[in-house]
Image (cartoon, rainbow, N blue to C red; front, side, top):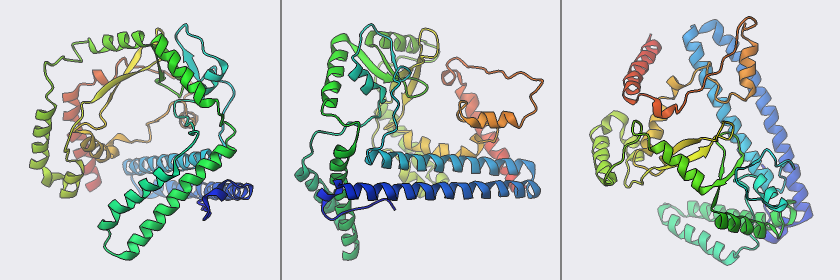
Length: 382
């Protein structure tokens, strides 16, 4: 609805095109607001009907599925509108950067550097210029690679039209954003370069906090020391003498090939690994706790088991979701649940597990999962 295009890419930055884009975007936002209100009303009516028809355990499972679906589509719509607002040069930013930055060093940063860091690590800085010829060549190369796979001329023309529109959008959005973005400044790249030089000279690293979008500035030596303290725990980590990634990849491929009939031919082809990267361990500082400990994160992206783990997570999603679970304790969903509960003469207690994931008994968890899956399937069968 808001994909407004002009045949001449230079006209994308005209004032008339800007007003038309904004009006279309406002109309689309209002349309989705009305759509969300209607869906919420329908969900409430369905909940009442489910309470009168289904048994209690089935009703909980259906409500959990509906809740997860609503959260998914709400986040999807939010990301779409956030991207469109950013492309239109409408950024919703606050001038208070004291809570957005946590500087754990003695190195001071100027106001311009602090303002830039306060926008977060996901802030995109537009380039000073682009080479349209090179970008056009990339689109033409993409068309050359895809077109032989299409079986008729009509589909090739559709692909060509789609790529031309994408090229016009890309070029037009650059000139439009450069002209209208209030946060755009010729000094932004200079400020970013100064931050990089200051971090290199003082041996600093910039990362995000464990919770929230706070930008954390800390010394590289402190980061390494705290991460080494985590991996030095021999009860959780074990040092190996050589890299067995290739051998493990071969054994895992044989395992998937042997059991391919159990998860289907299509699924087997989708998560069969052809290469493998070593998982990467990094840490996020817990700035809300004393001495700022690190939360270890093991990134499995690119590893041999990552596609299979994604498929397995979707398979186990029904037993991982329940109406009693709250994904974000800071959201209003927790307050809504407590408001419906009779807790006037009770205490609300919060527990925190130290190093939760590294303390989970893996073998016991693997034994529990099949029993839970079998129990749920038996209930659904009866």
